[in-house]
Length: 207
Image 1 (cartoon, rainbow, N blue to C red):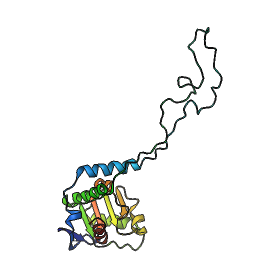
Image 2 (image 1 turned 60 degrees about the vertical axis):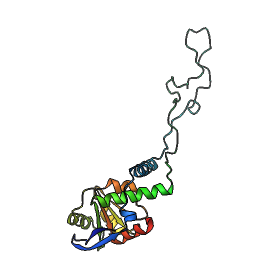
Image 3 (image 1 turned 90 degrees about the vertical axis):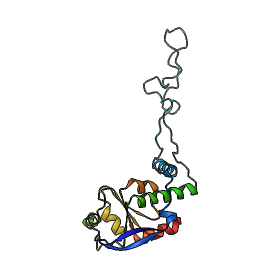
Image 4 (image 1 turned 120 degrees about the horizontal axis):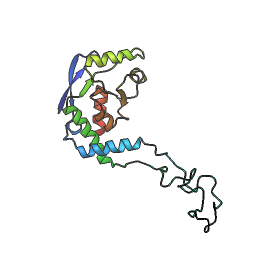
């Protein structure tokens, strides 16, 4: 089993934590991680952009001029794409960008991302975070004592409003729970900060 150092909120070493190799110590599958990132980013797109075609713009019911004898090009409507105020040809329409992944690939991608962070020594396990009140300075101080990078992801076992609100105004810092954790956020951060209880919960879910 892989062992990681457990730190206190003040940055002191407290103990060691054994992590299951089946979750935190596998050989990372880059293809699975790539697919998971593509799927996540695609899901962020709303796909609501829409343009009006010639059948959707107002006007254009009458033929502008007769077919022959005027010397001008034949026209059937003033709302054809080449006309001012005409419809848009081949413009974007609402669509879904969703990329489906099966359960096995999603689990493999998550375990690969976790193993990547452990192998790179970018995973920091904290015994617990105790804040008396919502205060950004407390999180800033904690990150400084832990030597965390500017882009950090803090993972808690369950939603904690005090931690979330204390960290949400810090640039580059994001808070997630075990249930909302995703491959993109793990790979995108430079310091992967996980509470001890959350680390064991992740192990239970993905083992």
